[in-house]
Length: 342
Image (cartoon, rainbow, N blue to C red; front, top):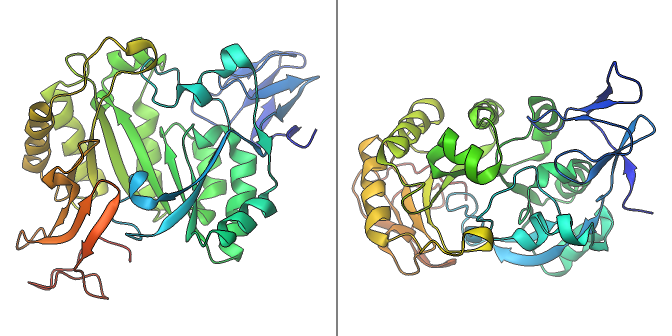
């Protein structure tokens, strides 16, 4: 089968025929005949195999703003691809059909070689490739091969990730990665991650972000705000302060509105008032580019100059209606150099 290949980033474990996966920060120790937590990497006779190489669950051409990436190549389009599976178990997942449904349906998808992905991107005149929808880390080998070919063909690459990729994996992948959207939930609250996502410790995400910055990968950070159980002001303030201090005050920061889904369909959408209050806290922490996502038509869909406060990129949803930045990426009113890659 084309989709089953020997995996990378694993070592033999002292226990007979066990292996240790080095792909994500769970560092699974996997018994013979068993899958890792992600459900797509299996120990077969003491060797680790990926079962989703090129087994795509979704393929679509998206505006880059959908990722969301507001400051990297505005108005460009990306060919978005995903497999099934995830190393998180979020009870509110918006894409649970592909991230979690493997538990009931098994592994599924249609095979597409890396070369076919690049050809498809060029056919539809996409500017780049985005690894998204489910957690891209879990299809690392395929993502690596696609990204390497993309760079050869002049296409940029982005990923939308939960930030649990291991240091070992990022060290291999970063030369082929241009930008990343890293998704927090509930401002990184540890209890929330354990109870609603089955993730014991969110701290590896911060290390991942610092390594991305060190490797000069362009970063935007999102933060899903779940009403009442994931909207604590003190958590938001702590996260915003950390981003401002460690990643820089110009790091784009997105507060995302929660919508009921999957196993948390009884919780209402986040109120706009709460999102606006948290946005003000993030700004008070020093962040210069704070966005509100999943609220169509909100003023904080737009980009404003940190110096003069004037609107420089106007959006409606994922559509850029007006981009006033100069060719050098400067504010046309005061000349401020924006943290935007054009």
